[in-house]
Length: 370
Ligand SMILES: *[C@@H]1O[C@H](CO)[C@@H](O)[C@H](O)[C@H]1NC(C)=O
Ligand SMILES: *[C@@H]1O[C@H](CO)[C@@H](O)[C@H](O)[C@H]1NC(C)=O
Ligand SMILES: *[C@@H]1O[C@H](CO)[C@@H](O)[C@H](O)[C@H]1NC(C)=O
Ligand SMILES: *[C@@H]1O[C@H](CO)[C@@H](O)[C@H](O)[C@H]1NC(C)=O
Image 1 (cartoon, rainbow, N blue to C red):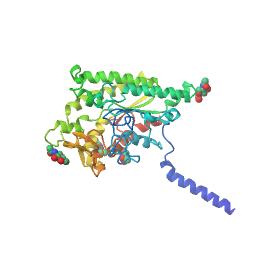
Image 2 (cartoon, rainbow, N blue to C red):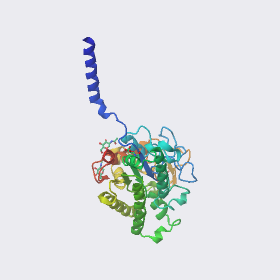
Image 3 (tube, rainbow, N blue to C red):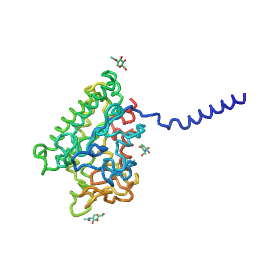
Image 4 (tube, rainbow, N blue to C red):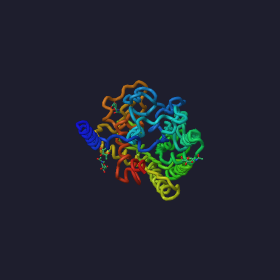
């Protein structure tokens, strides 16, 4: 009798412990797999072995990352690293350059620094894996996964339909193409309006290719306020540590972003049956981040934490250069990329915000749980 009573007490004790804590304990990831496409904002090491100036596998990059300088272009986690954690993944998504076979099933990161929607974008920095090549690499990964699934395509399709796809492209098509007229002809061949249209034409094809290859839950991100990064502030405000953004670049990007939002509506309204696309308004959130800097604990929004010259933005963070001490007070890590602290806030907004202005038509958590 005594043992039974104490057993009951133990069971009740466990249940109430569980009621209190279980809901906050992650139950495993919300999606079985996470595939990532993009540029240096989300690259996690794919450029390490290629001939490019767009590399970050040297200190002080990764100074706040447990494994150090992995090739991520900031001091710590990228936006997709934070998203992987919010989704409940026990590990970060590995780079495609180091992932094969059944490991592909959990998710892979195809992103490459300097990459763009257009193949030639980023050539000024050397080699890179353009969006077209990233889609081809994903097609190769699908072939490998077909083998794991013993060529049962309907089972593989079913599996991939539950995965989350994240695509963040386009910044370099402006930064390292259209607004670099000494290297590229696009600004003489296109107006900002026709350029945005040409980019979106190519991009919609790439996104449809991903759909053909099984993608159903897809996040696409707007281009951020590239006209306000330290690199542009330094170029646009010669002679001072200025904070005036280059609105010509921002205006061109707004054209692209509004077209991308319309594309998401078209895909969701019947063009790609069975899919759900989500638009993350990184342009708006990067603006809010600066506008609300102090409420988030930031003190410096117009200078890189590590870099050289005006706004620490004329030359990007050099090998073994000493970065700023209080990195959580800076929104920018270097001339181009946000700090981990900024990435944590940006990822969280896209994950949980109820505002359609931040993330549309649903947030990433809702997309994952569909
Ligand atoms: C493919 O997988 C599905 C679901 O796992 C299963 O029901 C079906 O029998 C499989 N088809 C073949 C040909 O093995
Ligand atoms: C800009 O600021 C940096 C450090 O904050 C300083 O070293 C530099 O002299 C300043 N440049 C100009 C032109 O004011
Ligand atoms: C940030 O600023 C915007 C206006 O720019 C405002 O609408 C929003 O509520 C602010 N958010 C926070 C978290 O302070
Ligand atoms: C994430 O965003 C929500 C809603 O804006 C906010 O309540 C929460 O504190 C944020 N969490 C973090 C870690 O920033």
